[in-house]
Amino acid sequence: MKIRDNARKDEQQRDAGRDRWPVDGTTGQPLEPRAQPGYYPGYHTLSQQAFWDEATRKVVLARVHDVPPIRFFSPEEARLMQAICDRLLPQDDRDEEHRIPLVNYIDTRLYHRRIDGYRYEDMPPDHEAHRLGLQAIETIARHMYDRSFVDLGQGEQDAVLQTIHDTNPPAAQDIWQRMSVQRFWMLLMQDVVDAYYAHPYAWDEIGFGGPAYPRGYMRLEGGKPEPWEVEEQRYEWRAPDEALSDTYRPVGGPGGHKQQPSGQEGTH
Image 1 (tube, one colour):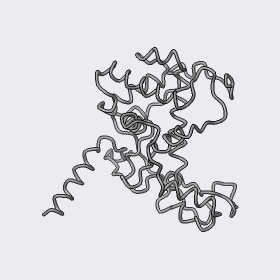
Image 2 (cartoon, one colour):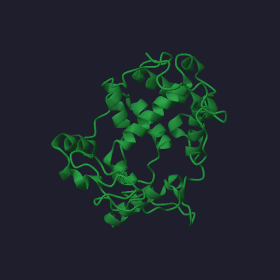
Image 3 (cartoon, helix red, strand yellow):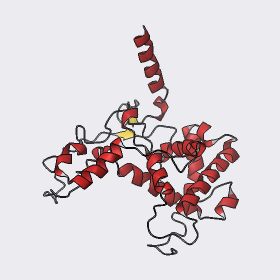
Image 4 (tube, helix red, strand yellow):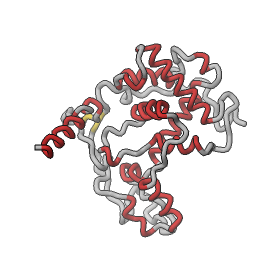
């Protein structure tokens, strides 16, 4: 009976998030989380690790087996950052075991003060910008819905983040006087995307062949897979009905890319 009760609880917990699952574009039914979403079923980049050099293998395997602890964010900040990452790059199509710990890797970069080698003159250092941005997002959530961001529904959370994406936040103006809304959005998105696509599970999802050194690639034209890769198998899907992610809007809102500089203009 205990085993049956535990199984029932697991099923209830899984089904509680059905409204966040992506939807089958043909049947309209939610797509259950899986170990490997994407168009390359059965492909595993790590199966090729014997062909990598030792230094590469060590770095890549650490991303899977040695997840860094949270050291920069406070517990409250980490919880808020997790909720934000869950909307910016949802992983509801992944089972719990194969979700990529985005917050941990963003936290590590900020803890070690790793930067790209430049900083925009209208932005504070990255670690300060993230802290200010979290405060601003929480302030906007309470301004719009009188609740914490982490307690909002996914549509409400998307609406809060949309105001920053559109560079038109309705609150936290004292923070936006200290840094650019648009540059903060780009910083936040870059960190989320970088953390996700640096992970081997994401490589499996997009069919990436993994590190090329020292073996290299040989089929460089025509979109043909390497012998160790698999053929793409596409399927139709769309975002949940409440989410805003299926609607494209350029950064800066309908006008698009307000005051978007080219290259590293405005950096120091």
